[in-house]
Image 1: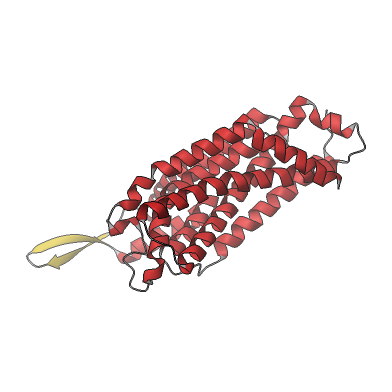
Image 2 (image 1 turned 45 degrees about the horizontal axis):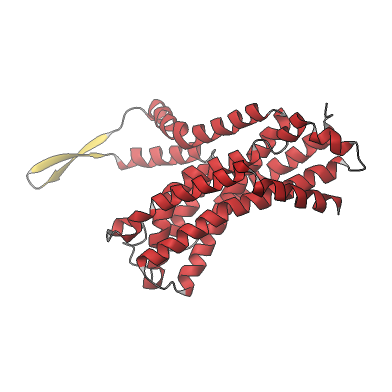
Length: 296
């Protein structure tokens, strides 16, 4: 019960804080800024629009997801890191943890209550902007969503929530281990930058070193001779790149998102399992470190 009381108080403080309101406002505005594309007639807005197997009842959800999905992989990690980087370190720096421990409250209750409050605020901070953006996109299209559309959008929002949880758990881990908000924020930001921007380009350089330069073969097309990349080289290149990028959280989310955008549902749950397992492992590690370490 003490953990729940701590969670209730912490959640109230979090959602009323200027930081939380600013993050939600910025996230919402960034998503809404891309909604102007939802009314464009181009079929390229949705990866699934050109797939014959896609049912017509799914086209609305796919078009909306195609627009929202452009910004989600970039913005969600930022929201998660910003909400979690000082969740433990901030309390240590302000002496809140020492004050709580001076009362008949155990470390288990403090960390459990803080986790529950943080996870709840994260879900609220991610779900509200997504719900507003999806609703506005549907209104702009002027189409009544079918049950299939609603089910697909709910699935997508759930996957985004799992992705956000993974980055949040990582941020909480840094916050717990460092007990310093600046270091925690720097560590979480570096992981995000490396995963989202640096590693994709670095993986190409690594593969070029391993496989050598691309191999081409000449193909006769009418009166023209064009160079076509060797299929075996491309297969090896793609396989190696997937293995390298699979070390990041972003890769596993993008694989799931691409499956949903194809309109075929989630066929491979590996990425989802990895994100959930990573989140649980990070939160358990944070819990263990906080309970066993002395707070000064």
